[in-house]
Length: 396
Image (cartoon, rainbow, N blue to C red; front, side):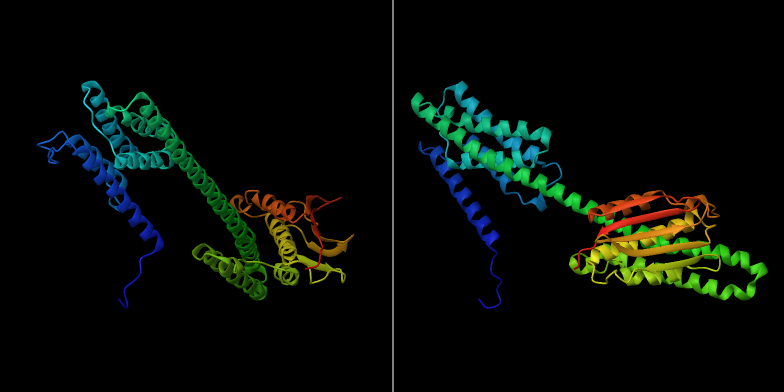
């Protein structure tokens, strides 16, 4: 009919499988009642077959969303198999023949698959062995066939068990690898977001803190010069909020579009970064070699921007007494060299909580080496500190 939604291929396949399973169980019931007795449980020995089939069908076909909490994979796979095994052993003890059909075989194979793939590791082997054992015990119910026929049924059962268990192990391995891949992807995303927070938000917030301290010192002596400092605080706060919004956007959204909105930088942005860093007590000089091209790969430019940003942030945190910071960009033997040097002696007036936890240079080194570059950081001759990074300068 027009307007009626067509069933999905997965739904059709599931419906076909359920139909085949129910038809196989009907064959089991017909086999069990082939002696002419009634199929009613109260009037015939058919009732053990009905109980095993009904419990097995409930375990296999019960929808996942409608299963109670106690119906765990262990219970689903263990109870029907135990009932089937008890039925087989009872037939052997009483020496009464009870035939079995394809329905119970299919149910036990399905339960074996569920046990091996979905049971917790400690239970998978036990529940799987119980399902396999119940399947191999089925031939003992029919005492009529010869030993050769029983042996053939057992061999066929072993083959089926091997195929089903092997498939379940393979799929479980794929699930495990997929879980590891997802965990690693999530970890990489967390590390990237943490780097963004550190590189941008911490940079701006540290600037706000330093400029606030400068404003407090100038309030009593040079109040007429406060306006540029307050303007710098306002600008740093605005940039921090913008960076935070972009990072939160990455957390809320998914896909390449969100990744493109991650905070980044380039060589042109380094000039803005150094201009915004300068203060009345600190002079920043940017020296860029004309040979340094703007056609460098975007990843290299972004990493160079991060190197300068982290180095300037560390100057604010650990060398507030520095009066001159020099940033250099030059091409050296086909590589981009980025260096940031200061003349500070380690004096700082920041609170201890604002000194950072040492993650900046660690993350920066990971970023640089991932691009095939090198990073060095250490004291300069005489006084001060220098951070130097070398990147492959292949044109994009």
